[in-house]
Amino acid sequence: MVAALVDHAAPLLIVAGPTASGKTALALALAEEFSGEIVSCDSVAVYRGMEIGTAKPTLDERARVPHHLIDVFAPDEPCTAGDYSRLAREAIAGITQRGRLPIVAGGTGLYLRALLDGLFPAPQRNEPLRDKLRSLAQQRSPGHLHRILTRLDPAAAQLIHANDTPKVIRAIEVTLAARQPITRQWQQPRDPLTGYRVLRLGLNPPRAALYARINARACEMFDRGLVEETTQLVETYGFDCRPLTSLGYAQAVAVLRGEMTRDQAIAEAQQGHRNYAKRQLTWFRKDPAIHWLDNFGSDDKTQRAARALVANHVIGNPDGSVSIDLQQNSPRGNR
Image (tube, rainbow, N blue to C red; front, side):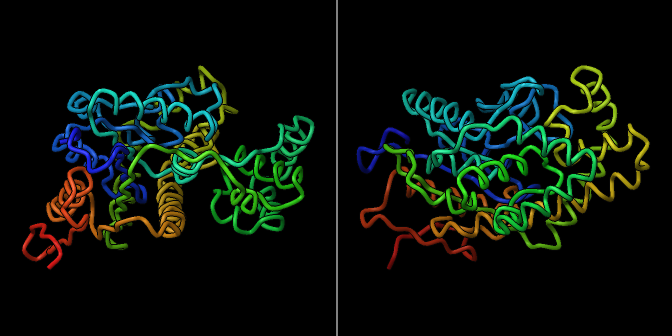
């Protein structure tokens, strides 16, 4: 199917949405249907040894369909949005050359933007400023840095979690260096991805059901041994390892340090993931090109609707359009 293109540009599929919305399930179904390979778009799944807290595709799922950009870096190695963009573009090009459909699946909006739109010309790193901000975070709190960012760039503060100290520091650094908010700099000319026809699918399950799944998954992570996995990571890389500030791991670290009980850590992780889901939806809703599917990616009707959209994108109707009748569960051309 992938070889049957409607123009010279190659098809590229994006599956986006909030955490726990079923992106992996939908991406797997589409990859098996359309001879695809999956490129992960997750800022923590790139790190080796971080399995439980990232909800990576299982080894069985990875055996069903080739996956890319999972377990690429050691946790103490930096991976920037620029690094991700470069590696993801290389992976997509290779998948296309093999005559298969590249499917980018994940919820890290900044990485997806870097991949599709390119990055703005960011200022050089200012290590003295970074050291000062790190010290300030240790002396006061990560929340204090986040409040500074809120004063400098409220829009950026809404998109970056208060506990993600490295991203907060970088946003402050770039804002001060350029003397304008980082979100305004994001609007500057970039190096967009070219040569592809991009279909963007977004998952938007009912909010109550999504939150229930988020709560259950956070609890399951601790039941499966998140604290034990975090212990191994701390023994190897230390408490200051950047990926350990991500949701789930940050709460597990607090348990190890005696700052929280297990139940408190679970509750905070649940709340943090629910808040993260809100921010993800806010980010993705700004993209008018996304085709929204109002259920989980594992839902049969959602998968049928997605298959119809992808089939139309890869093969194309004569008029280049398709409409989906979810009641009849079948695609039909415009009438």
